[in-house]
Length: 594
Image (cartoon, rainbow, N blue to C red; front, side, top):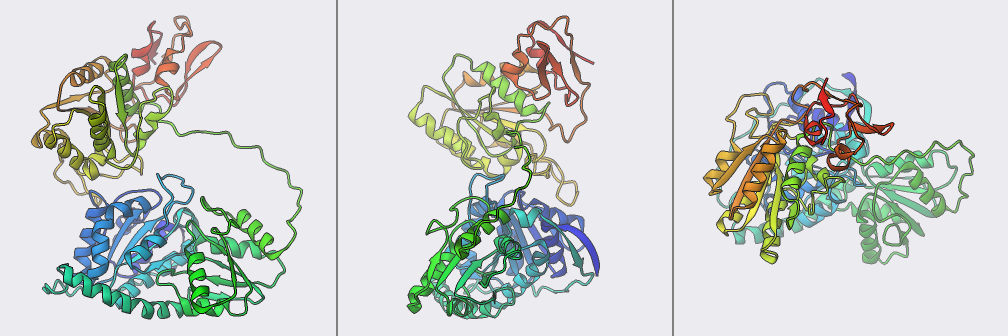
């Protein structure tokens, strides 16, 4: 055993390796990304690891491995589970042979997501077991147990760490032992692996019979616990249970505790043991009232006179993250204890720092070029998920819609059908183009829709940490692969006008957009310039203060965070990446390379 300081995602990865995982597939998305990256980095050499083109593809790759008897792991964030839900819902009916764990990292807050979603609710919807780790240390052990349950019941299982578990760090005893599993291989059986309607019906009946058995099994699962005594009880799950333990450690009070580590199927027998003798229960959880509803149902089913309080009763917040402080306040109020009055010096409030595109980011230049080309014209700019969502911020104001990955392309088509006199632009990044953009472009070509597609090709998946994708020419394991050309794909699917432009050449970029805007049908401009994080910077720029007239055009129109005003003159700081757009914008040529 070696003690290592690990992030929760690293712990999950090493736990999966220890458990004998053979195939790992996923799509990058905070807070889950580091799981797959750690498996790749610590790969003993016999694990197949890939960044799939999207979560649906990852789910299906892992499913193929699992029905062949291998242990398979899929990684994604909570909104990625939406993308993967089509195969997952059917896979829940078909089942698996080898253990299959789907990590869906939830993001309460949300900190870096479009939505607050609770994977525990998805588990109930999909009829799948779900595991909810409380800490990085537990996640290391629990991932192996999830594989065991998956194989025991021949079903995929969901594993639901939240952001604070994923990105929290802990010292963990890492075992050098690794379980060895020899896959049996795929055994043909069209009555099992082919999902016909009759098969689904029969398998649904099997799931209905299985769930009470699994619920009893979960009642004996060591991580579902009941402790303490008293007339009042508190139930919690996930990281909230850790917060609760910390909050109660300083309180001298009798209170019964219930920790629900697996909420579907709900461990009813253990929950009834918890409810026995109680008058009132407070439920603390993120995000949805999953445990709260389960306890309410249980009280109704068994005619128990126990008052259940939580999100539904307004005793805890219906949205956002919990903290030790918020949990302690809720517990003190519930237990009728006075709030602690401690005079502590309060730190100053942190300044509000909205996220911005990096200094030198080619996306800023791309947005600016489109904005300049469309001055005075009626246009709508449909955006997408990625760094370039930040194009909505002033002074660019170039993202009018943002729904989900790839949706900008299809939403632009819908807007066009209502406002055909509007020039409809759809922005998409190179990674997102492969993940979910191609279908939308095919739809536009097929239905002869007038849109201008702007592909922001910065040669990486920048938002989640610069992972490779099909357009980079290399795989997750560093192998050289066929580099898929976005321009060639667009031409192949019928986009007749495809221009490639350098967004850092402002004049040429504006001209390319103007030409595309004047056409009809689906027109595409690919702005190709590498992310500043994957390329060396060009020489920085400086301001000739003798020439600068203090017009602030470089700030007012372009908004690069490397530029500020001092003593009425523009000033470029050390974060300059040498993109040159500010020099091209300056009306008096006061900005020059150093």
